[in-house]
Amino acid sequence: ILEVKRSTKTARSASAWNATTAFAELCEGVSHNRELSALVFRATIDVTKPEDLMPDEFAQYFMFCRSVLFKYEAQYFLWKEGTLSDEMWQTRRKWARSFFLQPVPARMWEIEKEQHQYSAGFIQSIESAVVTSPIFARPVVSDV
Picture 1 (cartoon, one colour):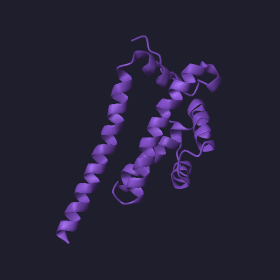
Picture 2: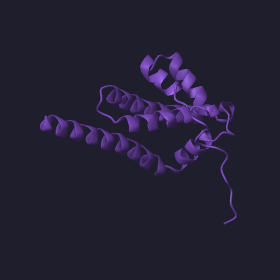
Picture 3: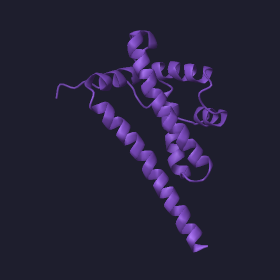
Protein backbone atom coordinates (compact mmCIF):
# COMPACT_ATOMS: atom_id res chain seq x y z
CA ILE A 1 0.00 0.00 0.00
CA LEU A 2 2.82 2.41 0.85
CA GLU A 3 4.57 1.63 -2.43
CA VAL A 4 1.37 2.31 -4.40
CA LYS A 5 0.91 5.63 -2.59
CA ARG A 6 4.54 6.57 -3.22
CA SER A 7 4.24 5.57 -6.87
CA THR A 8 1.04 7.60 -7.29
CA LYS A 9 2.64 10.63 -5.67
CA THR A 10 5.69 10.31 -7.92
CA ALA A 11 3.53 10.01 -11.04
CA ARG A 12 1.49 13.08 -10.07
CA SER A 13 4.62 15.09 -9.31
CA ALA A 14 6.14 14.13 -12.66
CA SER A 15 2.92 15.03 -14.49
CA ALA A 16 2.75 18.42 -12.78
CA TRP A 17 6.40 19.09 -13.56
CA ASN A 18 6.07 18.06 -17.20
CA ALA A 19 2.85 20.03 -17.69
CA THR A 20 4.34 23.19 -16.24
CA THR A 21 7.67 22.77 -18.02
CA ALA A 22 5.95 22.31 -21.39
CA PHE A 23 4.24 25.69 -21.06
CA ALA A 24 7.33 27.39 -19.66
CA GLU A 25 9.36 26.19 -22.64
CA LEU A 26 6.66 27.32 -25.06
CA CYS A 27 6.60 30.80 -23.50
CA GLU A 28 10.37 30.97 -23.44
CA GLY A 29 10.52 30.03 -27.10
CA VAL A 30 8.02 32.74 -28.01
CA SER A 31 9.96 35.28 -25.95
CA HIS A 32 13.00 34.78 -28.19
CA ASN A 33 11.03 35.97 -31.20
CA ARG A 34 10.12 39.64 -30.80
CA GLU A 35 7.56 39.66 -33.63
CA LEU A 36 5.79 36.52 -32.42
CA SER A 37 5.77 37.82 -28.84
CA ALA A 38 4.15 41.05 -29.99
CA LEU A 39 1.61 39.15 -32.09
CA VAL A 40 0.66 36.81 -29.23
CA PHE A 41 0.21 39.76 -26.90
CA ARG A 42 -1.77 41.84 -29.41
CA ALA A 43 -4.02 38.95 -30.49
CA THR A 44 -4.85 38.01 -26.91
CA ILE A 45 -6.06 41.35 -25.54
CA ASP A 46 -9.75 42.17 -25.63
CA VAL A 47 -9.50 45.14 -28.00
CA THR A 48 -8.14 43.05 -30.88
CA LYS A 49 -10.69 41.48 -33.22
CA PRO A 50 -9.93 38.67 -35.70
CA GLU A 51 -10.32 41.08 -38.60
CA ASP A 52 -7.59 43.30 -37.09
CA LEU A 53 -5.00 40.65 -37.92
CA MET A 54 -3.50 40.12 -41.36
CA PRO A 55 -4.18 36.60 -42.72
CA ASP A 56 -0.58 35.50 -42.08
CA GLU A 57 -0.74 36.87 -38.53
CA PHE A 58 -3.95 34.99 -37.82
CA ALA A 59 -2.40 31.82 -39.25
CA GLN A 60 0.69 32.16 -37.09
CA TYR A 61 -1.34 32.88 -33.97
CA PHE A 62 -3.70 30.02 -34.83
CA MET A 63 -0.83 27.53 -34.96
CA PHE A 64 0.61 28.89 -31.71
CA CYS A 65 -2.78 28.45 -30.01
CA ARG A 66 -3.19 24.98 -31.47
CA SER A 67 0.09 23.94 -29.86
CA VAL A 68 -1.16 25.28 -26.52
CA LEU A 69 -4.46 23.44 -26.88
CA PHE A 70 -2.78 20.14 -27.70
CA LYS A 71 -0.77 20.51 -24.49
CA TYR A 72 -3.97 21.32 -22.58
CA GLU A 73 -5.78 18.32 -24.00
CA ALA A 74 -2.87 16.09 -22.99
CA GLN A 75 -3.18 17.49 -19.48
CA TYR A 76 -6.94 16.87 -19.56
CA PHE A 77 -6.29 13.18 -20.26
CA LEU A 78 -3.68 13.01 -17.49
CA TRP A 79 -6.23 14.51 -15.11
CA LYS A 80 -8.99 12.20 -16.31
CA GLU A 81 -6.75 9.19 -15.67
CA GLY A 82 -5.84 10.49 -12.21
CA THR A 83 -2.22 11.37 -12.91
CA LEU A 84 -2.63 15.16 -12.88
CA SER A 85 -4.03 16.72 -9.73
CA ASP A 86 -7.53 18.13 -9.72
CA GLU A 87 -6.20 21.48 -8.51
CA MET A 88 -3.86 21.78 -11.49
CA TRP A 89 -6.50 20.81 -14.05
CA GLN A 90 -9.12 23.14 -12.56
CA THR A 91 -6.63 26.02 -12.79
CA ARG A 92 -5.76 25.14 -16.39
CA ARG A 93 -9.37 24.83 -17.54
CA LYS A 94 -10.35 28.16 -15.95
CA TRP A 95 -7.42 29.83 -17.69
CA ALA A 96 -8.48 28.29 -21.01
CA ARG A 97 -12.09 29.37 -20.54
CA SER A 98 -10.98 32.91 -19.73
CA PHE A 99 -8.66 32.87 -22.73
CA PHE A 100 -11.58 32.03 -25.02
CA LEU A 101 -13.52 35.07 -23.82
CA GLN A 102 -11.16 37.18 -25.95
CA PRO A 103 -12.29 37.83 -29.55
CA VAL A 104 -9.34 36.34 -31.46
CA PRO A 105 -8.94 33.22 -29.30
CA ALA A 106 -12.74 32.76 -29.38
CA ARG A 107 -12.70 32.66 -33.18
CA MET A 108 -9.76 30.29 -33.21
CA TRP A 109 -11.55 27.98 -30.71
CA GLU A 110 -14.66 27.89 -32.91
CA ILE A 111 -12.55 26.91 -35.94
CA GLU A 112 -10.82 24.18 -33.95
CA LYS A 113 -14.13 22.74 -32.75
CA GLU A 114 -15.49 22.77 -36.31
CA GLN A 115 -12.45 20.75 -37.40
CA HIS A 116 -13.04 18.16 -34.67
CA GLN A 117 -9.51 18.52 -33.31
CA TYR A 118 -10.32 17.72 -29.68
CA SER A 119 -12.28 15.19 -27.69
CA ALA A 120 -15.81 16.01 -26.62
CA GLY A 121 -14.84 15.59 -22.96
CA PHE A 122 -12.00 18.11 -23.28
CA ILE A 123 -14.25 20.66 -24.98
CA GLN A 124 -16.98 20.19 -22.39
CA SER A 125 -14.49 20.53 -19.55
CA ILE A 126 -13.18 23.84 -20.90
CA GLU A 127 -16.56 25.28 -21.79
CA SER A 128 -18.17 24.37 -18.48
CA ALA A 129 -15.51 26.14 -16.42
CA VAL A 130 -16.91 29.08 -14.47
CA VAL A 131 -14.85 32.25 -14.66
CA THR A 132 -15.63 35.78 -13.60
CA SER A 133 -13.57 37.75 -16.10
CA PRO A 134 -11.23 37.33 -19.03
CA ILE A 135 -7.57 36.83 -18.22
CA PHE A 136 -6.35 39.51 -20.58
CA ALA A 137 -7.78 42.97 -20.75
CA ARG A 138 -6.69 46.24 -22.25
CA PRO A 139 -3.01 46.80 -21.60
CA VAL A 140 -2.10 49.42 -19.06
CA VAL A 141 0.15 52.06 -20.55
CA SER A 142 2.36 53.90 -18.14
CA ASP A 143 4.71 56.86 -18.44
CA VAL A 144 7.07 55.21 -15.97
